[in-house]
Image (tube, rainbow, N blue to C red):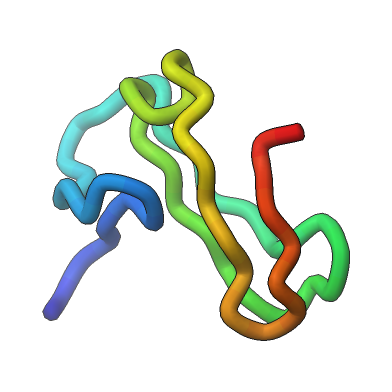
Length: 56
């Protein structure tokens, strides 16, 4: 799978102005990509490294 995909819904991120990429707030080891839709709807995501669950 090439490109970036939303961690929550698995949608490929292409020209999504509200999408973000960030490191896990707890461990900093995993990178998350979130689409604007999942961010707006506060869809949960889990870090596979430390089991951090967001958004809080």
